[in-house]
Length: 160
Image (cartoon, helix red, strand yellow):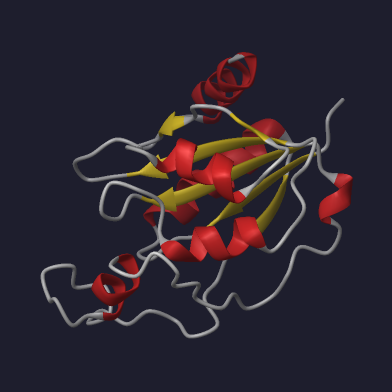
């Protein structure tokens, strides 16, 4: 059986809840992609053109630092990567995570929470950031899916 990791970034706690449930449902290890400098409420104000998140998302090269590392990424065959959708794609801290490890030969399954949009171009962007991996389409996990629903979703996502 494939060794699985659920890695997630959560700005408000919504994605964290889903990630923890997904890890339990798939018997996976869990890793929080925590920013070295935590985001404040003001940083997350997407309507403010000078907020940290707006500045980061407008800079394609921005790579926010992550506090901590995955102990043994080589041990994992499947990595679920969770995040809130920002500006119709993954937050830049996810780019930092993807560029920080060798994902060659691994399957990456993006999952996201969003108040109004889908994954957009995130899977395509993630594929470019993780050469040699297989990034599947993944999907949104909004609401509060049960562990049974999450296990079924994960199985279906991996069949893609």
